[in-house]
Amino acid sequence: MSNTTIKDIAKELNISIATVSRVLNNSGYASPEVKERVLAAAKKLNYRPNAIARSLKKHQTNTIGIVIPDISNPFFMKISRGIEDVVLPKGYNLIFASGDENPQKERKMLQVLFEKRVDAIAIATSGGNEETIRKIKSTGVPIILVDRKIKNDLDLDYVVEDNVQGAYQLTAYLLQNGHTRIGLVNGSQEVSTGYERFEGFNKAMAEYGVSIQPEFIYDGEFTTEGGFKAAEYFLSLPEMPTAILSCNNVMTFGVLLKLAERGIANFEDLIIASYGENDAEQLIQKPKIISIKQSPYEMGVRVGEILLDRLVNNDETSVFETITPIFNNGC
Image 1 (tube, one colour):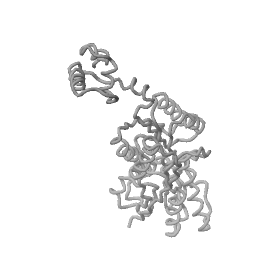
Image 2 (cartoon, rainbow, N blue to C red; image 1 turned 90 degrees about the horizontal axis):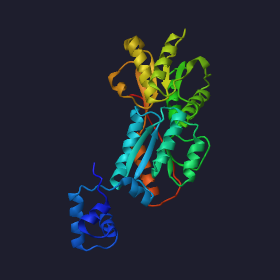
Image 3 (tube, rainbow, N blue to C red; image 1 turned 120 degrees about the vertical axis):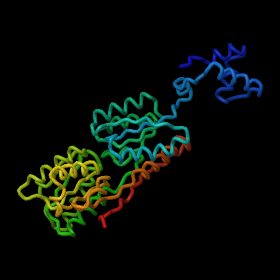
Image 4 (cartoon, rainbow, N blue to C red; image 1 turned 60 degrees about the horizontal axis):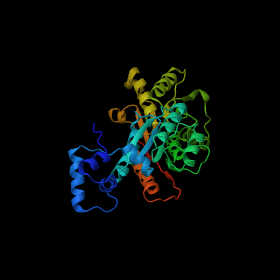
């Protein structure tokens, strides 16, 4: 790695450090001849600009922190790809951090990103970090919530889905088709995707006059393992559900893994409703799978656009966007 500095180039050419700096930073006047000499010397000495020193001087690092709750979940990686495709051409790089659905780890990741002087942060929060987010926002670092809102309104930008409506559509479809024993694999009630999807489920059950049975509710913690354990639990009940509604794609995968372990063909009469599509759906004809089609890449693109509005266009207009999910009944 080269340790060549601007001072070394100036010494090589016997010119001032200020002149070399003007040429390399493309700021201020320098004659074409001097520019040519400086650039040639920089190449000869294998000069590499010090990104840290430059960021301190300009008060920016051209980096954006992305905090997601599960780096293995394709949904969040598609969001991240959407953000990257928008901001990378404008010279911004992403730094990824995974909170692992753990508020303590998420808090640490937020602090690390802030200390790394990222220019902005996009976060799908695991909940419980309102105070940390508030403190970072108060320093002037733009923060945008993606997929998940926070309970205490901090007037933060967000791009989310209408989780209540999505879960309502899934539940209503099951009820319309005669399913009253619905096993719900719910996620954390500390995050908006958890309590809003539970709200949508409750809304549909109430409208159709069906009582919620506590034994048919299982906290899958938004993980594959949680979905697997939920299916294991439902299959052990004296009277098992005729339908299983899973509140995110990775829990659905866990449910399908358990059914596969027991022999998929044994569950032809079972219907699976999934908030979020799962690649495994393409391999399974029975049990029937219905789902909510999400648009994570498009969501990421929109987040990227808002970030550029903040960082490049200095636009401080608040953005609160809710995307309507698309119901897919498998037909």
